[in-house]
Image (cartoon, rainbow, N blue to C red; front, side, top):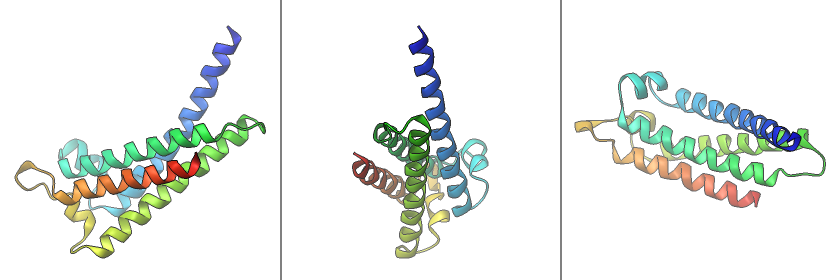
Length: 145
């Protein structure tokens, strides 16, 4: 029975590390886009913002899952948690770079474009950005295996 509680505790610790990484990703995306992201998604019900945020969170979840799998170490739990945090942070950095590069290579301000909900439908750029996040996450995840 003790093993079950120990495993649950370890899962909670990894979950907390993943949560911190996902919050960091949310904060960075909020800084890159117009308005307050939480209000834009939950109050304004902006579908483009929801698509981009959903793509980012799914991508970060994938990176964190791969980081946890790669973090199993004989050095112990602390090193595993730290490596998971660093790999997750690398995911946030790479996704931010992807967002900035797409913004540089496309017309208009990307943050504003992806939030354009004309006719109640997300701008195609929102889907592209969400897919870029997922593609980035798959690459980072592959590097960890």
